[in-house]
Image 1 (cartoon, helix red, strand yellow):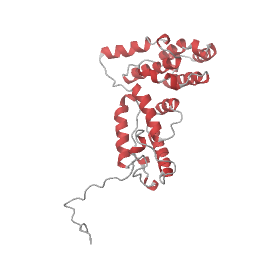
Image 2 (spheres, rainbow, N blue to C red; image 1 turned 30 degrees about the vertical axis):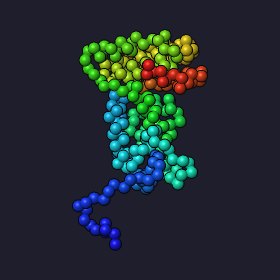
Image 3 (cartoon, rainbow, N blue to C red; image 1 turned 45 degrees about the vertical axis):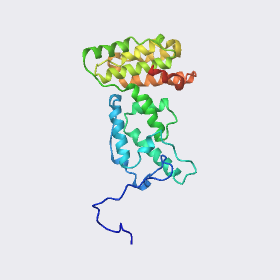
Image 4 (cartoon, rainbow, N blue to C red; image 1 turned 120 degrees about the horizontal axis):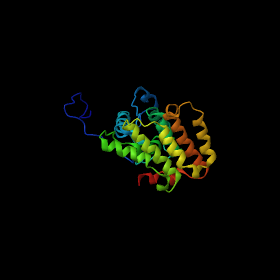
Length: 254
């Protein structure tokens, strides 16, 4: 009989070290134990992204699913015995993460990383997009003034592509929201349309101006959602003209 055949746990067993190569499929739970739907960890504003990401990681770690969102850890081979289970769980974790994000933030991520169907791809997209928008809403007058002037002084000529400019307008407007400055969304909308006319053509811009003219009160009727839709329309139009996300998004960090 083994010397460890005892119920005396005053001396713990030594930690079991993993053998073999560790990949994202290592120690995954059985699919029937997958209960992440019971947890809620919502992110409404990019300013809270760092804290939210850590909360997401800790929840997944409890379920031994945290490796699925780490692109630095290798994925399993497709002929691995755990490959199918890994894929199913990665997709489910990606859906769960999306469920815990404001829909506009999800749209921004998948717009830049359209093939982000798996958890690590989606989280990499979140890191790329949302970290650019994350900023603590400091309330001192200097910071508020800087946020306002950054928005109204944003000019198309300062960027090598229209896509960079469109992203920057959204970034600066998001900062004003985080700082609770109360800037009406028709302000960045007009800045955007006026600046990109040469890039997207008069027809695209005039169609949006006609929508504004049909409103009773532009200052009240242009909602944040309306501006967001024009933002995505502009990106899609630039896509159709051949200006891809890959060539334009990364320089946003300059």
